[in-house]
Amino acid sequence: MEEFLIEKFAYDLKVINYHNEFLEKYQFLKPKENFLIIYKFLINSLNNVKEIDPEILDSLGEKMYEDITSLFKFYEMWKKRKSNYHKYFLEYLYSLPELKEMYDSSTKIKEKMNALNALIKKTDALLKKNLKENDYKRIKKQNVDAIYEYSLIKDEYFAIMEKINENETKKEKVFRMYFEEFSDKIIQALEDILNTKIFYFTKYYSLRLQTSYLIKKFALHSGIKLSLTSITDYFFKNHSDKNIEKIKEIIKGVE
Image (cartoon, rainbow, N blue to C red):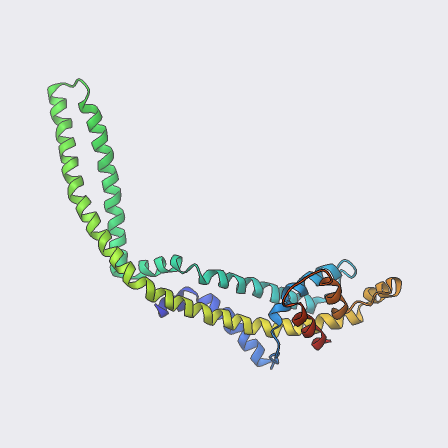
């Protein structure tokens, strides 16, 4: 199961490994606070600030922005994926040679049963019509043969399905445990990466607010000095959220 998950999500693991190596290589500091809780505020405030200074982000800032937004989507996807284990469980079962053989056999038999059932219905309908003796005998034989063959393969089909269900029941709990543990490790790794990257983006964004000519011009004309702290106060003025005070505390710690 572990091998299946590692192979199945090789790309995801490669992405995480790439970001971890990058952060380690350039010795990025890990923040003490949880910067994930300010992510949505950060993105929303940035979109509003862009109305004043569309170029608040330079080329470096755009790269940082794309980095954290794509990683956050990746992170959210994995939180949803964790509860959708059954989809991957079925893929896992089909990757097992003995079960794949049973699945393939059950599919072929089911197709044959459907074809025989259609033939039985067709010949039943024909036998109710006025037929010549030879035609009646020929169609009757087709009907009887189809009914007999259907009864034989139906038993075979249900025997295979019983084995499949037994295998699924035995393996599902174990797979779910493995998948949840695997997902938790990925989610935790992404949280650690995002926490560091959002921290550095916040520091960068705060600096851009202080140095932007258009932001300074806006402050001169409006009398409102835009900083992360003032934006936070305005943004949450009419909000009641348990994280607001923590968000404000984190923002003040950055500036």
